[in-house]
Image 1 (tube, rainbow, N blue to C red):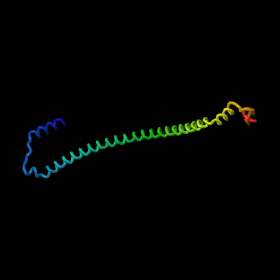
Image 2: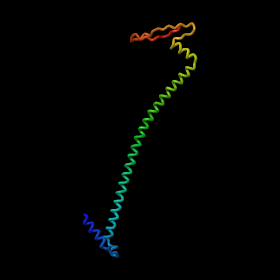
Image 3: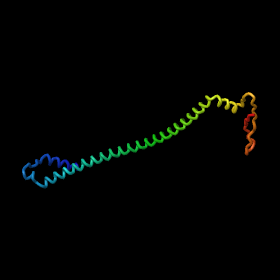
Length: 144
């Protein structure tokens, strides 16, 4: 290979092409020139398509990664939304309890029930609850 390239180089250096009407109008030379141009064009197109394929593959991969991130964030958003709903429900219950605690009658009823406090002239009797399972006793208050 190396010897042949050297010979071609010497040949190209020593040989001067003819530039006359016959050579310029030679159909075989014209066909060779068109073939060289076609080969160059195919090579350029091949390089372009390889480059385009690499770019498209990179874009598809980036799209897949972003889709996975989006799905993970949507799951996280759903979990946070569930926690928010739970917190709002708990807050609503606490607000209701707070509103009840502002009522004096409710506080008096709660104190009588939980702490066995009584009003004047009221006697509290505790009666154990009878349960089907056994001796579970819960004090029950009754007013007389």
